[in-house]
Amino acid sequence: MIRVGLFIICTIFFVRFSWRALANPGTHGFYRFFVFEGILLLVLLNHPYWFRDPFSAQHLLSWCLLLTSIFFVFHSFLTLKRRGGHGEREEMPENHSFENTVHVVEEGLFRYIRHPMYSSLLFLGWGAFFKHITPLNTGLILLVSALLIAVAKVEERENIRFFGPVYEEYMQRTRMFVPWVL
Image (tube, rainbow, N blue to C red):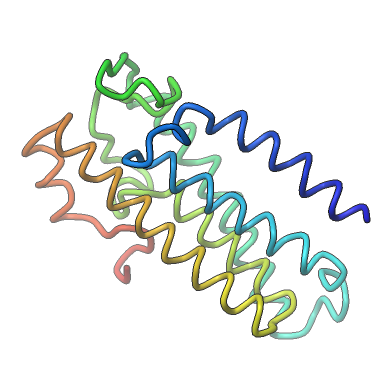
């Protein structure tokens, strides 16, 4: 019952955060909402298993992914804040101000990957998945991963429209989520 309550409370928060984007299915924020919901489901479904046998190989992998997720989100947020600059994008009113960078950032994690915040969500989802592997969780993490790819692709189209060839060149030098891999 507590998990259902947490799901409802978090969903209300995600709806509030994504309200403008949910009205426009062509934006990255629209798909990102469903990523948030999928990860929330994984965390809540697997919560009872998080501390069972915490030193097994499966759980150690999970903890590594979860810690990587935390590092990625903080590092990328601070780097964007410090180097991205901010401006309004009239063509994208559903964006939050922190999303409206005016410079392509190419330092820190951004030197290797274009979407470290989405990488953080990917690692968070997979970290939660490895806490308790079931067919339902497998389907859910595959759906979340596919949605994250969709979010990134939509955002890349938005960035190409805003930054032009500079962003296309940046895409050629970097990976989407994981350095040297994906």
